[in-house]
Length: 92
Image 1: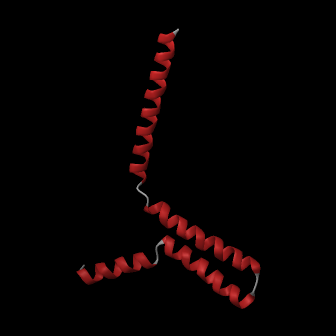
Image 2 (image 1 turned 90 degrees about the vertical axis):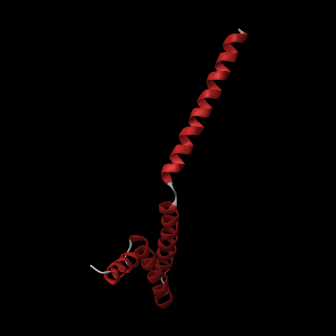
Image 3 (image 1 turned 120 degrees about the vertical axis):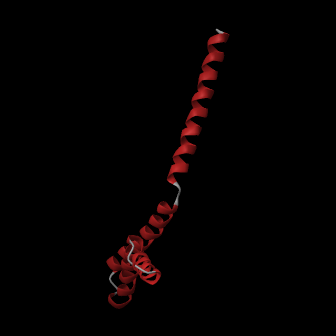
């Protein structure tokens, strides 16, 4: 398989990725609303388009890093609670 074939496959993969298809469906629904003026098509077009944008940002986020940060915050919180408890036990 040569480099050109790999680039074509990659391009096709990008074009038909799930996010792009969802966004395309939202845009099609919005465009069809201009012709039919049915509010349900406008509603679903807006919802699908917003959902595709949200999906893009959710998939873009580095979730491994996010959960590591959450775990560190949990450990800090637990340490503070433990110290508070020790101080209250020492004061009594």
